Amino acid sequence: MSAAFKRDVSINLGLYSDSIGDVTRKRQSILRSWRRLSTLQRMVIGILLLCTVVVAIFILPGILSNEDKSREEELKKAELDQHIEKEAERLSANNNANQMMPPLEEHSLISTYDFFGQTQSARQKEIVSAFKHAWAAYKKYAWGHDELHPISKTSTEWFGTGLTLVDSLDTMVIMGLKEEYEEAKKWVEEHLTFNVDRYVNLFEITIRNLGALLSAYHLTGDEIMKVRAIELGNRLLPAFNHGSKIPYSDVNLATADARPPKWGPDSSTSEVTTIQLEFRDLSLVTGDKKYEDYVHEVSMHVHELPKTDGLVPIFINANSGDFRPASTITMGARADSYYEYLLKQWIQSGKKLTVFKDDFIESYQGVKKSLMRRSEPSKLLFIGELLNGRNFSPKMDHLACFYPGTLALAYHNGLGDEYLESGKEVLNTCWETYNRMPTKLSPEITYFNLAEGVSEDLIVKPLDAHNLLRPETVESLMYLYRFTGDQKYRDQGWQIFKAFEKHTKLKESGYSSINNVKDAGNPRFRDKMESFFLSETLKYLYLLFSDDPRLISLDDYVFNSEGHPFPIVKDSMAE
Image 1 (tube, rainbow, N blue to C red):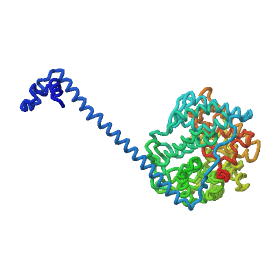
Image 2: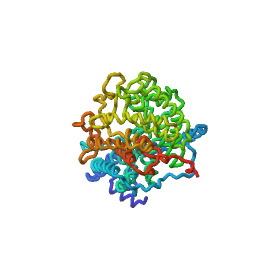
Image 3: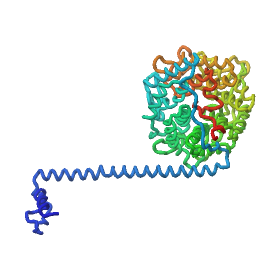
Image 4: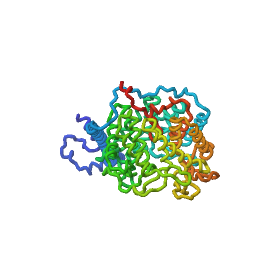
């Protein structure tokens, strides 16, 4: 530094004397130097020092912390990716001896059906109008949000992933609603993100969001659906990475943390065994077997657990991997879709995963032995429950009305006439839970009389009298009509649809579940339109009235538990 420059600095700051060479005066005290400064100079220096302190205390640590946090997140993600890869290699090695879907080098995954050019019957057009009415309300009052509340005209979040919109994607394709579908696809492209810092239920988001995206991809070939499905699938994998073969029920999509439910260590049996179709299909779409490997290990673990004539308790411990002792055995909530996915995994695999067919057959024998009874006085065949795994209760959830359709599907795939006959009888019982109510809509739960001398088969308790717009009965009607051609199933489906129109439809804000199916004059709205009303109920009604057997042929597709069709793996796909 030159002497001239140094002199200039000395004059400006007052820290040096006029005589640069005088060593003694160079070392004058800071206090004397400070006193020589003008008020303005002192103010400038004070402000600079204050700014330095502020930066040092408040800003710099934040920057360093963010950098550390970013590095930690990157390391955590790298470790998670590495762990997933190692787990995938381990699972692949362990499962070589087990039955799994065959590897496919090339496959035909995209439908060639002209969904947007199909001809619709008069009744199909009415059902499409109902969907458009519900969709318009969702768009107006809840666009991009998870669920619509049609009475208050508000929305709420469950996952924060546009649940109703995503869940409805393939319904719009199947119904030929091109304009609505394209608008929804644009939202998926521009706004759908799974970087959501909240815990979501592994089962629910898998069957609804992941299932819908995969199905929409299969029906349209739109690449964005595949991209979003892969992103979601990867964010769900941490639920499997905790040392047990049973996944945790909840996973945080943003942080990759997973945990059991807040109320205890147990998961619902149906929840951990009703993610297999989706993850197997994701492996089919991506060519990456890690997704299938994870869920196959879950299925094989449950396969090995002791059961009661093939029947499973409703709770399973995610830490120990064992069923909770003395849990209820039912075909209703928390167990229902375990049985559904036994049959459907076998079908989805092109009938190669015979272990699941065998488990389904065993469970059917168990249902006949332990759960099926006939009511009085009409001898209706219903499916009850075993409380504590032992004591019979004549209680049947509406959820159990999926079973007639599943039995019919078993018949269609060669398991024998007995399955169809049982399906017909149980479906008739489900129908009566609608037909005998003043609203012609079914309650959520029905009890059945077993004592002789009574006048009515059905008992509906006040707290069980609500209707949530559920799909299970119309789902089974669709299966039975397709396999038998019996017009009565269409007639019954139409009566149910008209009852929905009469008692659950709102003038401008969609449809709402109701509180009391026993009061036709005042069923009382519950202020919620479930996403499955659009993804399942109206879809199955639409398919029930289709005269084209090629429209989602049951020889080519298998539906997941939320009504999303996946292609059945066939030998021709590998050719």
